[in-house]
Image 1 (spheres, rainbow, N blue to C red):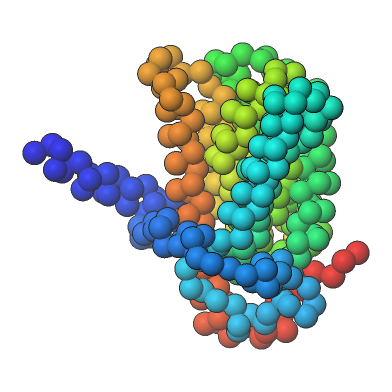
Image 2: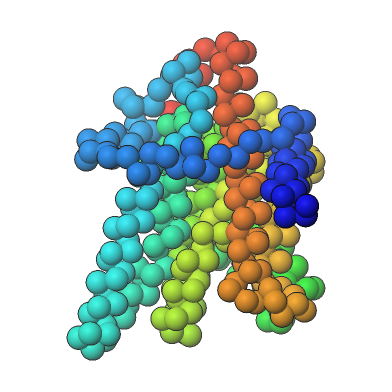
Length: 343
C-alpha cells in the first residue's frame, strides 16, 4: 500500500512546494515541472546555422519586438553542445596529463575543469531568455568582470565581518550571507546599469555573475587541493553559485518598481527578500556539515539541494513566461522593448 502511494505523495509534495514558491512570484498555483519536455530538443539534430542563430541574439538587428517574444515553454539545447565541447577538451587535457605525464597542461586543466559546468549553465540561461535582448558579448563581459568583481565584493565583506572556516550551521549561514550579498551588489549594479527589467534578464545576469564566481573559486580550490577536488566541485557546480545567483538576479528585478532603478528601499519588498534568503539558505545548507552520516553517502546532501535549487529555477522560468504574457496583454508598444547597445 505504501509503495503504490509513494509516487502520489511525491507529486503532492512537489505541487505544494512549487505552489508555495510560485506564490512568492505573485501567482497562487502549483507549477507543472516537465524536464523531459524542456530538454527534448537536446537530443534533436541541429545545424551550425541553428547554433549561430542562437548566439546572434541580442544585437540591434536580432532583438525581437515585444509582440514577437514567445511565451511557449522554453526548450534550450545549445548549452548541451557547449557542455560536450568543454568536457571533451577537459578529457583530452587529462589524457595529456596522465598518459603522457605532461605537467604543462595543469594550468589548462584548472581552467577547463572550472569552466565546464558554469559556462554551459550560462549558455542555458542565455537560451532561456526569450526576450533575446542581451547579446552573448554582453554575457561574456558580465561573466568575466562581474564574476571577479563579485569575488572582490565578497572579500571586502569578509574583511568587515568576522567568520570562521568551520562547517557548523552558524559559520555556514554567515558564509552564505556574505557571499550571496557580495554577488548581489554586483548583480544589482549590472542590472541597474543595463536597465534590465524582466525576470529572464535578471536570471541571466545573475547566472553569469554566479558562474564567473564559481569558475574562479573552483580553479583556486583545484590549485590548492588537486584534480579530484576540482572534478568534484565541477559537477557539483550544476547546483551552486550559478543557480543561486540566478535566483538573486530574479529577486533584484522583482524588487524594482515600475522598471525604475533599484534602491535600498525596494530591496525590503517580500518578493526580493524571499528569493534572496532562499539563495542564502541553499548556500548555507550546502556548506553545513549536517550531523547525519547518511547524507554523505553518494553525495545525498548535495543532490537534495541541487534538486531543490532547480525546482526554484523552474518556478522562476514559469514566472518569466507569465511575465511575457502579461506584458503582451497589457499592450506595451514594441518600441519600449529594451535593446542594450555596447558602451
